[in-house]
Image 1 (cartoon, rainbow, N blue to C red):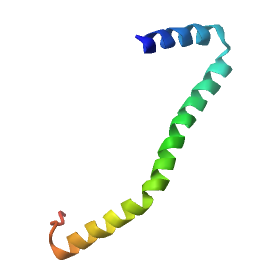
Image 2 (image 1 turned 135 degrees about the vertical axis):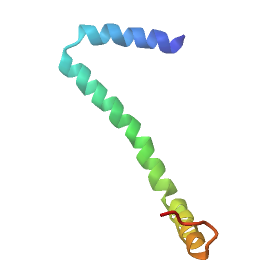
Image 3 (image 1 turned 45 degrees about the horizontal axis):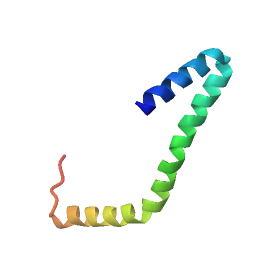
Image 4 (image 1 turned 120 degrees about the horizontal axis):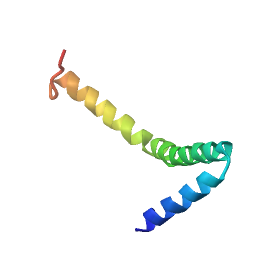
Length: 68
């Protein structure tokens, strides 16, 4: 219900604003969602690298079958 009211408020603000401001705000919101994802990628990079090495070793050893 809270999301519904926030959505309605932004509909009213967006319809009263000029298009440039709405597009700029939309771009900023998309950018703000990207920051936590990039931060997570940086934090998890060593673990992904370790898992990738284990995966490639399992393929070489025949534990995981390689499909063509």
